[in-house]
Length: 559
Image (cartoon, rainbow, N blue to C red; front, side, top):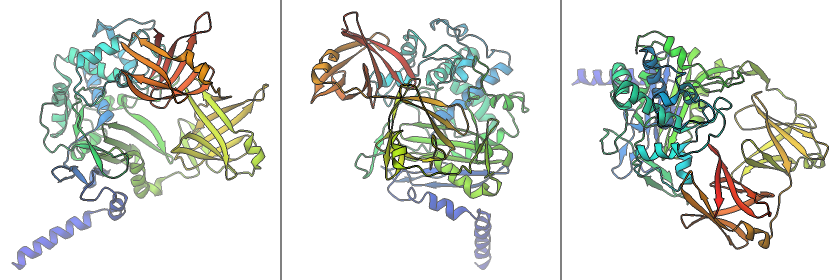
């Protein structure tokens, strides 16, 4: 008996001493999840080729009270995209496709636009093809429901124009990766699920990872997802039957993703060697020669002076983040089953515990540029701050920002729950604080007395917004906007009605929310974007174009 007790204590001691000294601080970070009646997540911390810490917090199935462990299997959302790009590169390695091939070579029924579309454009999100998730939302379709591949492909093909000419910009589009999955299937002669299993997952020993393309299939150890109720008390079950692959679709766990992470240091797939790994990190180029800022479903970045490679994912309450610090051979994996998880922030908090001695504090290097973080703050009178108060419109992004002074501080307002302090470093230049990046905001006054605001992050290209004066419409003026508007590309009617002196949007006869006036013939809706109304030769409203994030210039004609 004493012998077995000794062995037990010895094994316990080995496990205990094997834990990193930061383990208690990590558990404290996830204490909100580590409860018997809430969803949570699983984490993995990798250092020098070893999974030095893994744990599960909270419940994976609230109905059956099944706890989350490092073996629990989560939907990983857009983190799936890197398995698509790796599949594409494997097929290129096999000589079966070229990244500069036009899309129509493999999908001949896809429409021709004014500019060629290539596999490379799709990989780097520079195609201009409209995002199908956004199109589904605008059409009033719930992505939680069972969605047919042909239906979504048909919706994408129905779009008469691109958001922009291919190669001109970078704009994330799930449509591109949905179609890349179709190309893999066409070239390989088998589904993406089978190809990835045979060429990636199985060779790496990722036994619990798959592309889920049939929602009737069973997944062992699957975690279900939840969102917090509007009153903040308890969670709603998000029952997802979504099974489209390419834009997402992978289910995996901490243990398998550790194996995937390590393959970036010593590639065992395809022909072997690091050439294909180096390709994965190459960022696409825009037509002007500038970087698109997006590699092969990987984001190259800088955190506190250290190089990072990362990608996140989120859908239907599932959230995921994989971030790797290649020079330090350190990675953090967080998989969650609650919509308020914020795994990106938590992954950086874990990083702060382990790599703080490596951080470069005086400077942050970003894409070859250096930004001084020791800006000296100056004092400006409230009257000087008030000069910059007002409304600013960003035409490229189709969004408005409000600046106002509160408690002798200039505030940058995005929404009721999202605003930041701007602290002056000169008479016309401010630093945004507590945002996790080095954000500078500058102002320049034009001849008309209005300000232009220049917003830059980590020394990057400035985002320009111009001051404008809001237009307040009378009830009589709003009458001209009332009516039904039809979109051929969505095959749907939007209706506008006046209610309580507000212009209200209705879709499928369901009341949505008000349109808020920005300026003449320009309205915004918190859920559906920006409405640019047009008038006919008689000055009457005849239609509008809708800009909403990943879909722009969507036309509606008044009936």
